[in-house]
Image 1 (tube, rainbow, N blue to C red):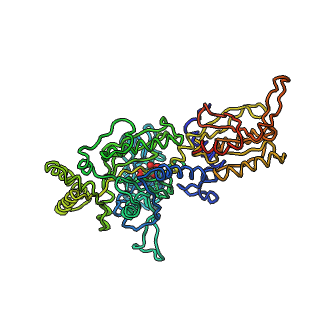
Image 2: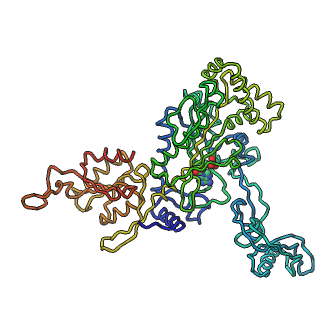
Image 3: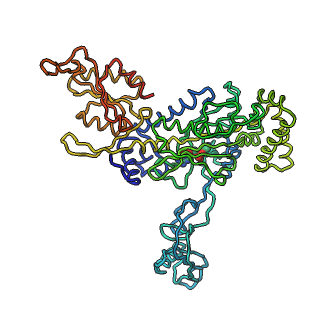
Amino acid sequence: MAEPKENVLMEKIVSLCKRRGFVYQSSEIYGGINGFWDYGPLGAELKRNVKDLWWREMVRLRDDVVGLEATIIMARQIWEASGHTKTFSDPMCDCLLTKKRFRADQIEAQSGIAYFYGGAVDESGAAHNVPYSVLVPAGKPPESARKTATQFYELRGIKVKSLEGERSEKAEQTTRYNPENGSLLSEARPFNLMLQTYVGPIQSEENIAYLRPETAQAIFAQFKNVLETSRQKVPFGIAQMGKAFRNEVTPRNFIFRSREFEQMELEFFIKPDEAIEAMTGTVATPGEGHPGEPQPDWGWQMWHKYWVEERIRFYEGIGLPRTTLEEYWQKPEELAHYARATVDILFKFPFGTQELEGIAARSDFDLSQHERFSGKAMGVFDEEVRTAWGKLDEEKKKALWQRYYDARFKYLTKSGVAPVHAEKDAKEDADGLAKGQYIPHVIEPSAGVDRLILALLANAFAEINEPDSKGKNETRVVMRFHPRVAPIKAAVLPLLKNKPELVAKADAIFKDLRQHMMAFYDDAGSIGRRYARQDEAGTPFCITVDFETLEGVKEINPETGEAVSNPEKKDTVTIRYRGNTDADNGKQERIAISELREWLLARIR
Ligand code: GAP
């Protein structure tokens, strides 16, 4: 099996996606729009499968998670409380020559000779003092720097007679220059990534609204409603999936980083560690591997580890082997200010190993913020904690009270509350814990649908070399999706399209299967071409209706050595399985039509 090179592989994937209808560029007929992608017929099915599997695993099969479907536009205060209005930004700078915009933290460091200019004198002899600088590779003549500088001044309307104050300096590993042309870049400034619109007929400051940059915040904002209407109690989770929008400075790598995308997020609410300790005497600490079924003595670290392992298990279950994934535990200096720990699940994309999903332990930051900003209580009352607290000895009570107080005081002061008020509020919070009241902490597994689609596409992509119908070797694409995610589960292929009995049989099978799964009927072209088309679409099962289906499977008569149809073995079909491992690739099996549906359902669930 050929192993395509990495960057070439991305090109092949993008081209297959367009050719077969997985993903198209948005607004392509008008030249496209950067950072936006549309899913075609196969892509839409693939995406639906991914989302359905996530929802099934995270919500339907669990007793402790419920769903939410909130709006994309929400009250503006939500983004003030969450910190997005102030801090959800990327550092950006512009090329002073071409105006091209760069993410300051993604500029490649370069070395060379930097030429500095104080300004330029125009043809009338007037001096224009506008400092500028150009980086050229060591050994390149100063003329190239002068040429760029002249262009820079002329773009500002100065008819350059001479450049002023040229001096040069060696520059090592600098990110201050445009790697494409050597021009100086502007200073980096924060650029807010939220996409903005107006709600109502007047485009005024007070009518500004944002398209949500993550689905998570609605979960926090609706926490109390869900708690009161779902009969859940902490620990429990609220899951949501849907569109999110970010005005990414550099959308790139196909659907990996786009401006409109989908997220699948779970906010799993847990008791603070002090409450766990009050109830069970200790807080369990994680070891290696999956920690198993949730236990009453689990604090945030165990829950965090549990969700990391559960999410990896999910990816394995849809065909991404553990060997394609990596866990990256963020270093303390990389953590968001509210996070106690964050694990990124990375996937080996063709362009490098990058984040597929983040799993953050967010403490009680989010609900606390919404409590402060909305003035509505976000805490819960927990009878078990109150009862357990009543049974503690005084020393333990004091120690746990103090720890909870310290944590609350730290959060409040970090959030800008004056220390005198923070002291009073933290004291009230710690007294509240003793009565069974607390603000739940949160573990957040947050995945991107589109990134997962790209990971599945990259993982499924394979090229095989096989002789075609004329015996000539040809290279063609086989998408080896796991049957659970494959866009089309089964293709029904009558051997010949001009044999009414074959067609009627195939049609009946197709009409039955499509009630239960995404099935496809294809009678055009040779059987080999039809298999090849389904290989590109990633269809795991091809069902061929042939003469043996009508007349019975051919068996060798031991006496004559002739192959004769056994009428008792009528109504069978050939299933060709294009699996996601070498072992099951291209396997064929003969199966009774009466068993077909169940046979397939057992393999696609
Ligand atoms: N609520 C937490 C949150 O939104 P994030 O790391 O910013 O965290 C979570 O985003 C996931 O959303 C990422 O792991 C990624 O899969 C996906 N994602 C984020 N930005 C994206 C973009 N511009 N394009 C596609 N997917 C994106």
